[in-house]
Image (cartoon, rainbow, N blue to C red; front, side):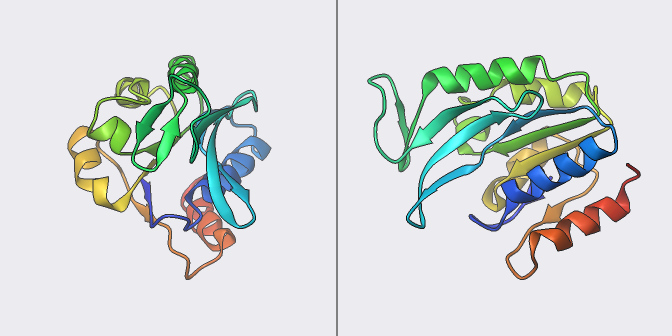
Length: 171
């Protein structure tokens, strides 16, 4: 499990680990959720298929489509959520599965990337990195067995966390 406060660099960490794994010849699959920043303000979130590099707009601070799902401060694109579930369904088998992130939409409201809840227990991967918000760790632990937790914080640069995890793994 990868956890840490908002904007601590969890997605950046996941992207960095994905690159290290690719360089080692691993098949990397799953979803990354990079932020869209405009004038230092987070205005959106993308969903990126890590195997193909294709991305879709997942959430925005403003309504983009009539059927967007309002959740908290964000308008989620329902088609992108469906697409993300399809991406997850075909991600296995792989060497490295990354799911960035399982949040309240998935863990408490049973919406969003529900496919993740079904593919993680299948364990058809060498390693999985699952991003979970700190306040949802107990819910995630009740659903999955995590071999370890990496708590990303802003006191160290992303390279520090990548080296720490890389030293624990044999790529």
